[in-house]
Length: 152
Image 1: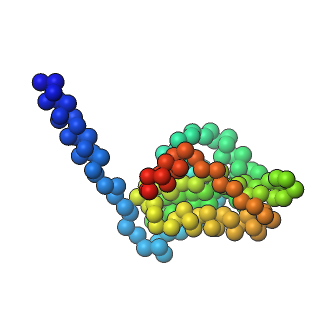
Image 2 (image 1 turned 90 degrees about the vertical axis):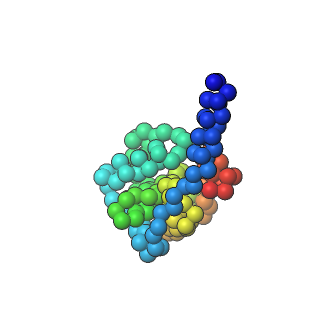
Image 3 (image 1 turned 180 degrees about the vertical axis):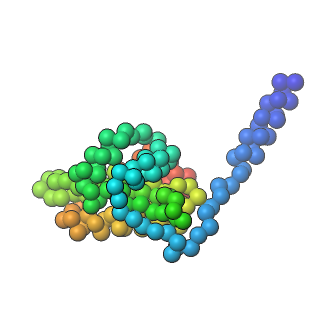
């Protein structure tokens, strides 16, 4: 009996593993890129980051970025009114130069692999350049590193 249960469990696990991730259907022109618009955007961004990244952040972390670097914080991607991606940045002096730093980058799974993260990063770097940054750093989070290694 126990052996039969183990076989059934393994069969269910294989079925679950084989289920492909659904990709969102959209045209590139349907994605709207928006800069941070105020406190009403914080819950959207916090949900997105909490859902996709391994590290939990308090509201104080988000406010740290907003109050010190409002022009660099929270560039977001929307599809039909739904927040599907965000990037959070800052800048500061580092070894006699201004360095831009991408702290968080998230695109929800159904929208990955379609250039949204690339567009968020490109727009962020452009803003950093306009703000006087000469270098740019992105620290990969463990989850993002795992996704890259798995080819997702």
